[in-house]
Image (cartoon, rainbow, N blue to C red; front, side, top):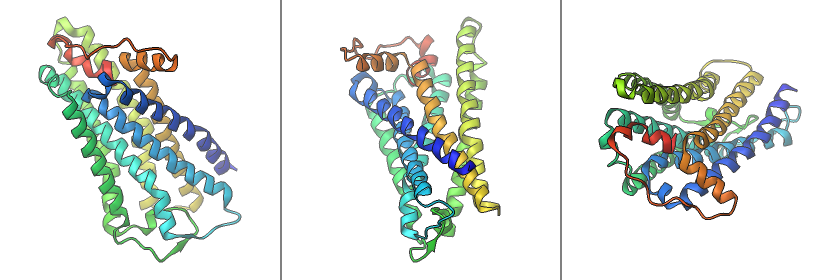
Length: 304
């Protein structure tokens, strides 16, 4: 019963994530000033990753309703790998985007003047291409040396992975979030060293960073550790399904929170989105040139 409620909630939340993430992609790509600014690239990458994760979660949830545990269905190993592909690809894209955003914010706070030269169209293209390439390769490696001649009663691909990919994926689940959190801690520490004249500005910056970091730890890092635990610690099958469903729901909820956070902190995105929904012509012109004294908050105003 608990599992059915969990799957029903997933089927309700996942389509919302797909709609909001797709809307984010459309708004940014259709607006030249947003599209060509590299500070918005992580938001596009994260939106693509969120769509992929939500799609994979829907596949699993629908299959659970069609073939409930009381009528188990044997799945070919290749089908399990195919169903896992969107989720694995989406996690690669999402984690890469969050890492890029953490690096951007650290550079923006530490080197605010130099940061202005980085938010170019060339930088945006480079970030998106490298993230996409890393995600494709990281997902494709799942098929190398995997078991293609087995049948399983669980629509899970982790048991079919090669030992090398299991090590990679478990390491990815731990190292990437830990590194992202360490970058944010460094950024928060540096932001607190601001001058007296900018004390109020840097206090606002610290609050923004702390809010983002807390949401990431609670809704992504901790659930990812639960998901990892189901792969390395022996436990009942029902508990494994429950923990994995919980982790994917948290990831989807984090995507929704990120969309709300984007609307809250990104004035140009918010205005453009409202204008697009009201079918009016956008009044935003070319990207403004900002003074170096305000550069430390630039990426937070545009891409938080």
